[in-house]
Image 1 (cartoon, helix red, strand yellow):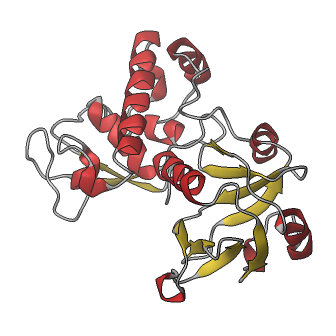
Image 2 (image 1 turned 90 degrees about the vertical axis):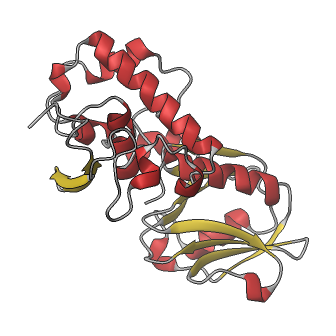
Length: 265
């Protein structure tokens, strides 16, 4: 599933390709992905307008439409964007195509059709409507503020990091990476970390997410010291070369090194 780094890469891609270009028509719209808006209303809001700026909150990408709020995209498990001109370069499983005045198309493709397409009054309004916590890379969220968010919270660290109502943007892959970098077992209880430990967790999650963005959210480009580059089958720990293991944490798969991440049970 695309997580914060992936969606930030999508945001920058959209900004570099499709901004300030009039949308002539909305095509190939998969109505099953529409979230709180009809196909007609979406077309009325978008067609003959240009996307003027971008924003992101957690795993949600937004693009401003002059006078009509923001186009809001969630990428589900398999979503992506593709800006192209030739028909033979179009991706498969297109769920919305924005035909632009310059002859190019911006395609929102989603193989498993688990994404969402909607409109929002603003990025803040979308976060409220979706019940999202602060963005994981919100510059206004300090280490102390993060520690207050988790203070008194029960449950396991991996589960807390993936709770979008607590902190928006982190999913399965990057929660594992953050905990690996701190040598913390995914089942470590949140309440075993003191304020200093929570501040370290916050600093590490920012470092991991920023590094992933810098590397295009591409595991092949990640530093060899990151777990993400070794998550494949039969992968080995980049710290000790031991075999990585997979366990279930709150119903989700967690990849970790049992030798380096011993905290928890």
